[in-house]
Length: 129
Image (tube, rainbow, N blue to C red):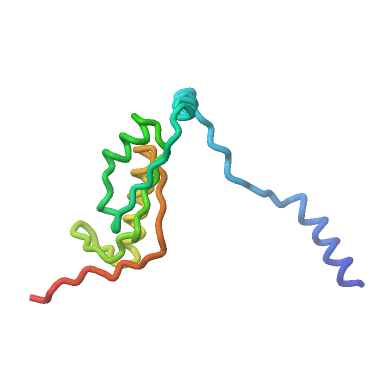
């Protein structure tokens, strides 16, 4: 019983000095609100599926999302961690992380939604010289 009262006392003394921070809600501009209202007039969705992150057709996704006002999602079966990287040292998981961030940034630009599966890319193998 003594231990419970000590814990309660510590909680009461520490709690007022503890701050809880949550994510701030996204504030939409008038243009974003207008575009969202225009999307309500179109009843349709599209799911674009490809095996690797570099197989996407950003122009088509952008056309469906912005011109046709469809709800568009791109499903990449892998995250591209088995590919090759000619411009940096990232390979395997780091390359997958890099490609994942690239896809998420592309979806912020073209208006689609990005999804992934849990499939693992087996890798790119280059013959030794």
